[in-house]
Image 1 (cartoon, rainbow, N blue to C red):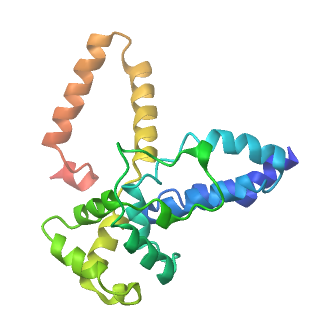
Image 2: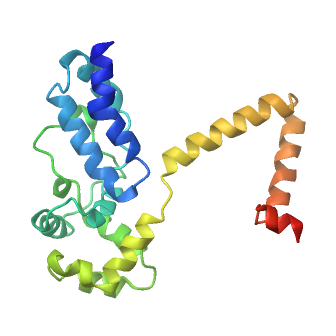
Amino acid sequence: MEDISLFVALLYATKWNEAMVPQQAPLNDLLFMRDLSRGTPKPRVADVALKAFRRHLWYVPEDLVALSFMDERNSNEEKEAMVRSLFRRERKGLKRLDGKRFSLDIYLKDLVTSRTRRTLDSLLPGREEEVGTLLEKSPETWETEATFLDMKRNVSQMKVVNDAAERGIALATSFNSIIAKDEVQKQYLLKVVGKHRREQPFNSKEAYME
């Protein structure tokens, strides 16, 4: 019990609280993997957690690692290396980091490829040239660039899909088990809810009183 408490307090709680911050997710995954690989805080617990976490490296494939360009914790040197990696050929197929092959020598720049650039472009649709111009400048100046600030704002407004999906699944499961048992009735109720949400996009008390 003491070992588990140390794991939660020293490692898991911090990462859990930051899970809703998209730009921090790629680096958090790498740091978490490094700590576990070193046997922190206790080798036995770390080994079990590492085996489980290797199956959940959603934020370190070559496309989503683009979020870390907006992470203030990454040094300018690291970001410069990431920019250089944008010219690397993308891997065949969309793949996340292979947890079984993870090593302490893997850094964010090692995960960046040309596919990452497409994700950066998608943050500002129609402004791809501005993104390209930004990447030609030193990361030291990015915080003063309107293009970067717009990208950073868009990333900060993203919903973390895994968390939202889990909450949605839990809500739908509870709803299904309480309201209706018959599958036909469940589908009908979902259609009614969907229709209501389209007709009443605002669910505040003030909106219903109008």
